[in-house]
Length: 295
Image 1 (cartoon, rainbow, N blue to C red):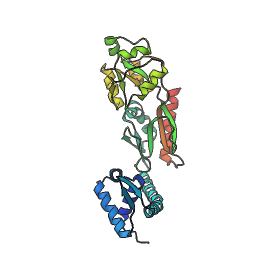
Image 2: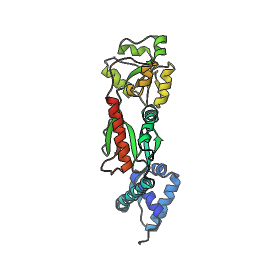
Image 3: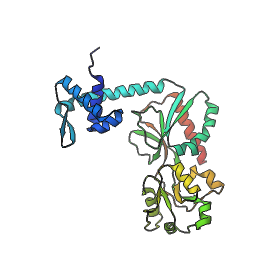
């Protein structure tokens, strides 16, 4: 076998060359920026060529660095994929699924007993996150995402339509009265997620006129937004399908029939990815559960 010198330095170079930023490379590799600089200097000394140009805080590859990066990027990607494939197959009875905590608690977790009733040998590991994970770098088998379903590299199967619509507690209505029209929402505290875009889109669709969002609440976790409206603190845009229990028993009230159908929950996995037997079992079961919901 050919000798591969400074393998760790080569990996550092590939990551740094992709980002063209030592700080971002350090974040990905979980080391300090100075450690990145040290690895690159050692590699440059060994090769006897400069790999990066540093000018006015900007970083670029030299011609030699660009050639080396192009030659190394695909092999390192193949190594990473091989390691992930090995991790995925190390335990054929286990599935690692990344998903949002709210969807997990409101929809999936309560259904898993039905799954295990049929396939008790398949272990499910739920990885809770509100961020989109990368199949190329993270040890996950499947992912459930909130979005438009337009991820070019992923196969996306819709599970639950978002249908975002204003929802509040019955207690808030008792305290402040029920808004009769969308324009009345200006008198209430509106609770946003990461930004004001969803409420802005709903206001536009409802022709509710200009709404001042400057004094409203922003809460990036749906579980916390739910608790906030249950405590009569405002009105949120919610997914009726995931709040069915609260709407049925009267704790929550859907205020209008107008909803946004732009975003939904999707099951995703890489396109052209060969699902294992257990993955296919879980995917088929999950889609059957959503079909049952829509009947």
